[in-house]
Image 1 (cartoon, rainbow, N blue to C red):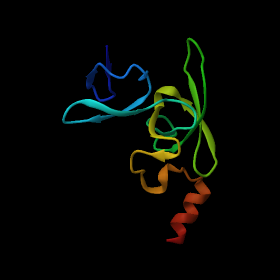
Image 2: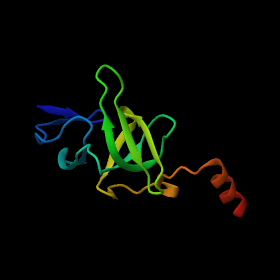
Image 3: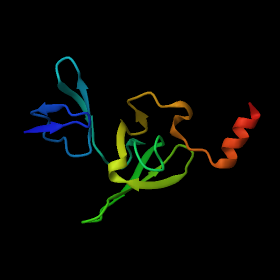
Length: 122
């Protein structure tokens, strides 16, 4: 048994609870799995592709469509909800606490008007 990470590493004998789309924290020197986060509702995610790229939020629920794209519904810190394809979503934290440092603006997408007002106030 083995699992392959998004960057091409092969991890031999992973924890049997680790499934597809879960995120694992790896010790780079030894190549061992330190911890993992399940891909499930309530965990923090970052969008890595599509029109919502760079946004951060919490998984609300996942729609399964056999033979087509699975859709994940996400709610960001401001309360805006959006959805994207499953392959665009990457789990970055357990619950509301991210394991990584978030980008400027904490992954919140401003509307055109809010973005303009923020730029004009500087």
